[in-house]
Image (tube, rainbow, N blue to C red; front, side, top):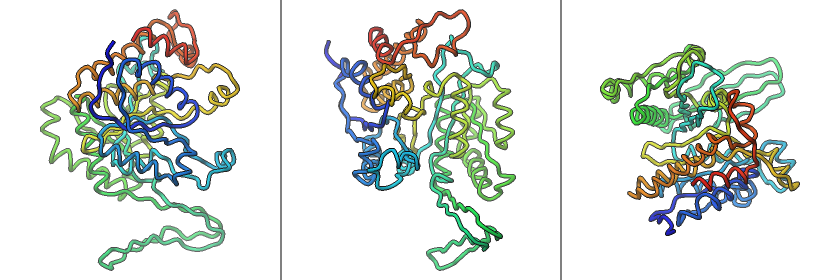
Length: 400
């Protein structure tokens, strides 16, 4: 069979641990036999980031801006434990996802992969809920410190004009911990526009929630910008499409989401989106079944899985064990990137192939062949058997 040709490469960002192993398997078994794959490769594994002083992450993000499409493997964000595990690390490098999001100024849209044989924990959910996570700033770009004595912390802004603003944060009577965070008006506005545009493309209602009753200025600015963008640029289009925009406080939104039927986009600030996307994934079935695409205002897209590097399985893999690690979200990252590349380059056969990757994966699960993490989630009476990762990918390949 003649392989499907690509005209423009996409950016390929390799990662860490078990997901790196699955990455190679997915390419070898599902893609390379059928596609003349063209990628611009960047190794975002932890040791590669350390060797390049994280420049490889910046280079990969800039390449994504240039080529318009990227696919990313899960990566390690080191903490103190990882610093002990990898003594060659020279620094506790920042999250590569945070760096990429900041450079692309994108919004991360995360949606569960749903199956008839796995019902959501919330029984009234009838359709997937997509989380739109603001991908810049807040605590992910924050600075923090500890102090050991009584004193006062002051937040000071010095403008280029020479003007200054100062705000007393707090006076403490002993040791304390402090954090300063920010966001940019341009990034918040880009977030809002991406959400409204995505809602229109999906023809789904858009919810946005924050806590402006407490963070009256900080969260209040998010609320104001969303309302301004909606009223001035999107209200007429939403009404024409028969969809709505809705704002409520984050705690009220959580209650409404649980009582809803699903089928809408829930826009959230950075930390809220980080937390709620995992909750939505678990409630629909599994974090391994959660897709993620970072969308920039200019249409640049970076596809990835929502989960981490599956460290526990990697240690077992290194000891020679067969692991039953779920590759579905990583498969959908690749299929999404191939479809997007095909759309931009007017290659319908590449778009069809990406869709068939997804269809073959879903058909395999519907036939009862699945990784062991899904077995406890299937409906009573559904006949399923657990297989290891390689067997699962071989089953998909046979259907593909």
